[in-house]
Image (cartoon, rainbow, N blue to C red):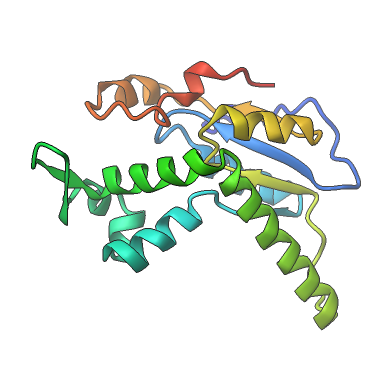
Length: 190
């Protein structure tokens, strides 16, 4: 999918059950734009996988909302976290390490947490008789690991590659080579 064009070529009909779609691509490739665009055509929900990572980082590592969500905040040095050699970590590096440690214990923990949030939302909607619509598509615009991609495929979903001109070049030029930043190069997409 190219978010800069008007065409959305998804070769699959939306089923009665929610279709899970994981979006992969370089930073700034337009994954969130594609998710927003799909929301114009289908009833969607996007339980971001990084939500638990950011909650832990705010609660236990003193990071602000801006530190966790903005490019500027993520680029700042963390107030006290350092590497073994004493050099300062950026907020982004703290977020990456928290995510790595969580997934070291359970590679699917972030998907399980997202699935749990979806189930709670559904129960609330049914309990409150709220007029909310059942989602046709569950989007994960922040898919970052092969176990996540495989889990989505095993449950009848798909992994979609999102590309934008020069986004990959910019992402590869960044010195911080965390494995999640180049995941889109190592996974097959549907």
